[in-house]
Length: 283
Picture 1 (cartoon, rainbow, N blue to C red):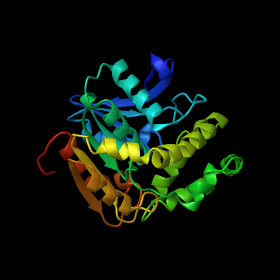
Picture 2 (picture 1 turned 60 degrees about the vertical axis):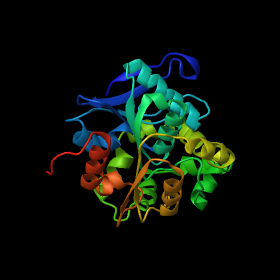
Picture 3 (picture 1 turned 90 degrees about the vertical axis):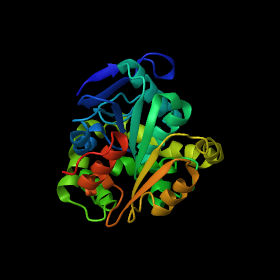
Picture 4 (picture 1 turned 45 degrees about the vertical axis):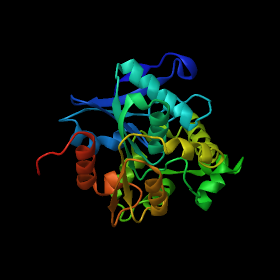
């Protein structure tokens, strides 16, 4: 997997790992909290015949650098901006899963001329109501969050993650946990995960009104793909987001939890291909 070092501002010297495939208009895939670039492998396979597809390890995750910093949405957006500049990409479409959707929306708000369109897959979008679960609220607590993080073991993480699926497949859950597990379970990685989770309170609660006002002026096509049985980001959140975006298309999935692109890959990736690149002949 290639690596580059960003230059300038808050992200100067930051090392990012990424995957790239295909040729055509640029599409950048952004994973969610605790995710990594390879989780988009099926989507890359589907889009790469007609696009240049990049999947990033966001700062603090995967194989990218994990500095001690404020892992806010604006910080992640600056990293995306640095990545596009370093790769010489003038304009790209962004696809984000869960927290990655919030990063994509934040970047589109701050650099609208650099974004063609945005797709949110089980997206958590700032500016709209969202109440973390009791497990998520535990992580926000000082000391307790660190203790819970240290107690995490692959078997326990898999059990928790499986609850995010409507009908979990063992091979998929195993992959999401086992891939690069030793690297993703280092003290630096755990600290980055906690920092990002905790900063969600600021981005999604304290700054909600600011984001809501800004999103009303987002003049870009936006696709929302959401599972009706998503307990991590409930369907009501997606419904509320749909009312606040000027140019939005919503695609609902039945029998689907928090990972639409992994639970229904053929359907979701076909929707993404149509939205991002254009209608194709039936396959």
